[in-house]
Image (cartoon, rainbow, N blue to C red; front, side):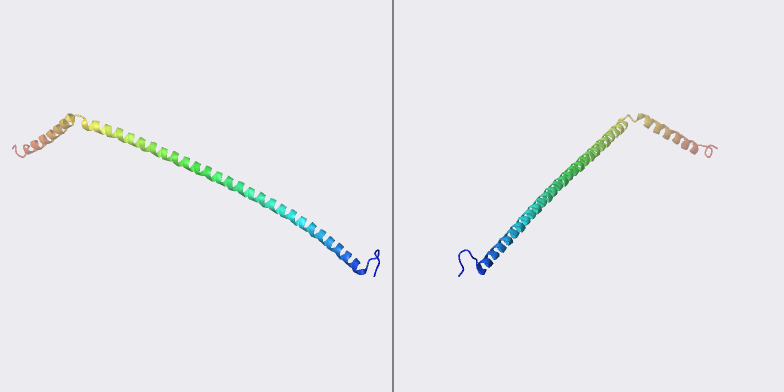
Length: 137
């Protein structure tokens, strides 16, 4: 048996294995730390991308709403123009109807006199022909 101060080959082997395991543990811990740092970087990048996607979606939603409002305003204005045009046509129609109503309501004596005098002159011509040269002679 070996004395207290001397180490046997088995003891040296255990120490060497323990030191090797310790180095492996340190390497594993370093690798784990690097992996955690990479995961943190990946998570930050995913968060940044998610934030950008959210901002982009908010932008496009705002643009879509703005466009929809512009389209609605345009439709309202076009509708108002059509209403104004229609009201103008109605006023023109009413004015024309009133003018025709006044013409129709006017006394018709002058027109009848003209018709009568026209018919009379036509009648005189017909009478004159009937009594004209063929009969008078």
